[in-house]
Length: 234
Image 1 (cartoon, helix red, strand yellow):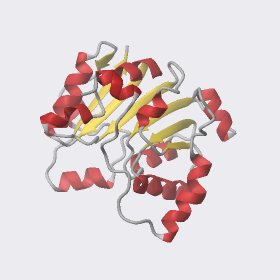
Image 2: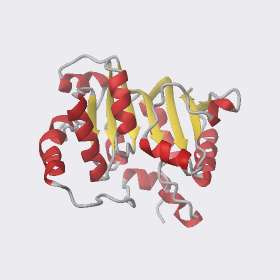
Image 3: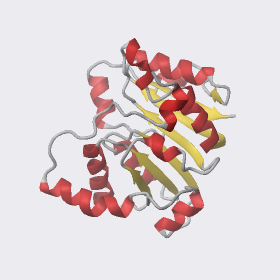
Image 4: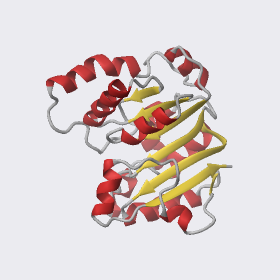
């Protein structure tokens, strides 16, 4: 079995990359919208300045969402914060198409998409490039033998501690008990992040400014209690 550092340097991907077949309109979005909002392969060092230049606009902040799913949260954040440039990383192509549709429908300009494993892209980010990072409802991989597949581990936190600037945020959420315990334990164990919660409501209630998505609403209907962990880079 590879170590965590080896997994990050030479990642083996375990999740799905494609779901149901793409419709003609979904393929159009993939062919014509995605290229306009993808991170250029030739851009080796990714920073707020370089990425702003690629969009032809000056942005104040750079924020990453790892595993954006259907893209609802990312699209809502981009709409609410037009002066922030968002990077969304998602290897599931149907999710990428969903975000591309929201970009087109809402005429969003401040999103860049990485349609692949985020670990490949993270090494290209300049030190302290990020103002913050979201990891919302990651795959829990609940079986103990699959714990090495969980996206949050010490190797990932090492990289995020280098790419998130001091006082920047790391915000995570889960509605799965195994993932909840794992996210909190791994983050508390890492020396470069501290938990900002001061009372139970800080992690039991969805914070202001975190838009509700269809996935979150479904979890509420099905009785899955979510937790919300807000960490800050030391």
